[in-house]
Length: 64
Image (cartoon, rainbow, N blue to C red; front, side, top):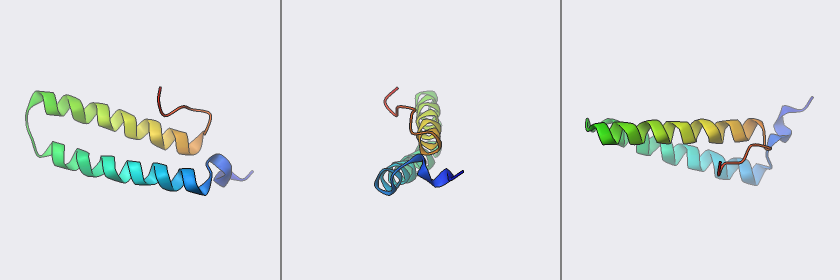
């Protein structure tokens, strides 16, 4: 089976870009030690995971 058909090239580039942006935000937030910021990091990581899942299975909605 062809595993590359999970997202159109345009959608994949858009999701990849969002993931890179969120990764950068996570790195910046990890430099802070406030509990609230750490909770934000968990939320962002969860969103990154959801986006990565979207790349593998386009039937999953990013806006869940």
